[in-house]
Image 1 (cartoon, rainbow, N blue to C red):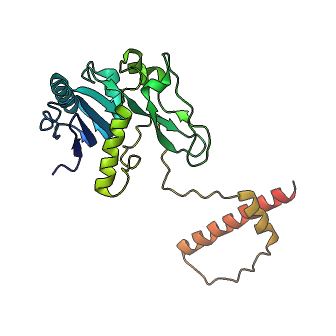
Image 2: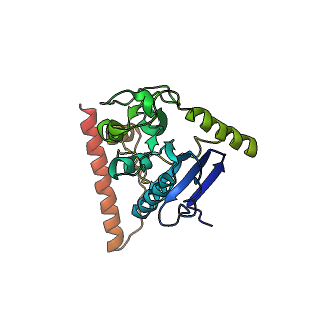
Image 3: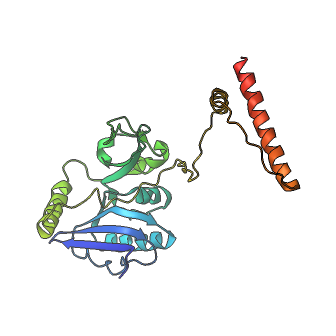
Length: 265
C-alpha cells in the first residue's frame, strides 16, 4: 500500500467524482483510474489534498486526463491545491481541455504568522488583470497578505474557459459530498485534508543556544556595596600556590578599581 498517495472515487450514472491526496509522483494509481469516466458526461477531480507533484506525476496526470477527455467526459477541476495551480501555470494542456472551477490561494498573517488556504471560485474573481481577494486571519482577525505573486499565481485564469450561467455542477458536487457524508457518517474534512502551504518567505530558525545578558556595571556596583571579607593568612605554599594567590589579588584589585570608577561618576 502506498502511504504517500491515495485516491477515492464515487460514480453516478452521468458523472464520476475523484478525490486525490498526497504526493503525486511515479507511485500513483492514475493509470488504473483511466477508464473510470467512460460513458459519463462529467469527471470532477478534487485535487485539494495533493501536496506535491514531480515530473513523473505531471506526465501521468496529463496522460490520465487526456484519456478521460478522449472518452467524451468534461473534466472539471475543483479545489486545486497550490501545487496543482503551479503546474497549471507551467505545463501546457495540464487541464486536458478541462476547466478550473475552484482553487486554493495561499495567505500569510504578518501579525501572528498564521498561514491559510482560501478557496476561490474562478468565475467569481472577475476579468483579468486579477488581484488577490481580501482575507482575514482566523486566529487574530487581522488582514492577511497574499503569499505569492498575484500576476503569476492567477495567470492561468487569463485564458480560462468554462460553462456560462448555471451549469448545474454545484448541485452535482453537492450530491457527491452528501453521499460521502452519509457513507462516512461525518462531513468531509476538507480543511484537514489540505496540504501544507508552500510559503515563499524564509522562516527564521530559533537558536537552541541560551544567551544570558550580564549587566557588568550593576555587578560592579553591587560588589562595591558589599564589605570585603577579611582574608586569613595562608600556610606557606609552593610556586603554584603563590601564582594562584597572585591571580586572586589581581582580580580583587581590578574589581576594586572598577567600583571606584563607577562611584566617582
